[in-house]
Image 1 (cartoon, rainbow, N blue to C red):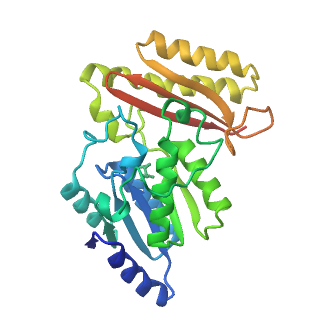
Image 2: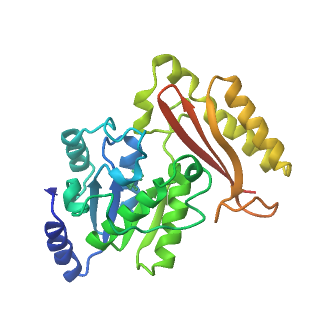
Length: 281
Ligand code: PAF
């Protein structure tokens, strides 16, 4: 595996693969890799010949009171994990390489509507930061396919919309959420939990499962299901931002015959945890 830090080096390498008629699959990450990220690399295998992962903690997607400065950074460990996973190229740029005029003054990409609901309501500007950096990374890497985790379901939906609307010739591959044995979705932010909070956290998955069972059984009282989710999480000591039933395709209001998803974000101690479950009927 080669590790590079500049846009020019990425382009030079990808050009060689493209000239040889080989497909490139890209996995963007913020590093601090865990088994969830490795499952993205695993999912990438079925979609191309060469794999690139980026490690970049993107300042633009963090709000002023969020954890940008403290976000866990483990570059050496990440490099070894990507090498072991069979990645061909690791792109680890610094902030100036991605935002030469600073992230505040950068040209931005925004997907309106979808970016201001659910997590977007509680983290203003977050998804604009995500779509801006992902669009830039896509222009740098020019992959044939890119892999995103279903754990960040709203992010995945927004990126699909961006790719369609900006006519980017990139296949977006969704990889299933990886969970600990007790159901907690893997996330770098789980490290912020104390031992006691870690023991409480699986209530998120159990509450999503309970809502999903009611929807699978044909219940259509979506507001009642959402209220019950909020109550359950609050009773367990969490501070939910939202617990919502939506159409999985575009996060619009739920309708009986459609493929649904239940999404939640809840604060527990210093962590803000997100998770979701799709309901196929
Ligand atoms: O999901 C993430 O880790 C980030 O939002 C992403 C897609 C790498 C953009 O910074």
